[in-house]
Length: 285
Image (cartoon, rainbow, N blue to C red; front, top):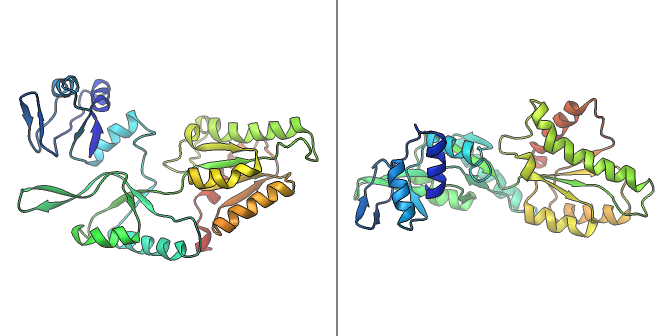
């Protein structure tokens, strides 16, 4: 698993007990580090001063948990995990539904998967951290993966678009609509601090909430961000309705929900509704 050396130093500073070991051999200014050799803080500082930007370390769940805690955006918590046969069926299902939509869904694998290399007596990497895995890729590599292996992953879709009509010619007053847009974004970004409701394990509110108010931008943002859900304000004119239709034509399985009002005294109920729709699969309905 390739990690920036500065990140490893930061993790070590905050967690002196953190341990990482070399996967790929390293040579720097006369020093050599071999497979399975532990890298101490002094080693990391030496490699950093020698101009080494990153190092290939052995992945395990403990190493990843330290990285995820220190750098939660770059090393996100897995959305879920599945066994070998379940992931096989899930990827086949995604491959089938991809034939009905322009959005192509897949998974990001969390961490490295290794197999034994009898020639070098070292682990050989089969899947790299954050590598996109679709059914075709899976069929190419699965023969090298243990049937007992648990697969940790994130979905290719992530994030929420808040879509509220802020055009001045809309029926109700602009201030009210602006407040609703702000309330929705604030609810998603800030409420998690006061609530036990988690939209998804890998959902980071400060990073994964996007406000779209221009209907011409909706499809572009939906494509670019791979957002998983569109939350819609209740007052939409024809331009806004057409933009939603374009999204539906692009992706017939797009998740959408209407929020008629934001009740400050019932935020947990709203978050539970959002969580339910966010984690649903429309093709399975």
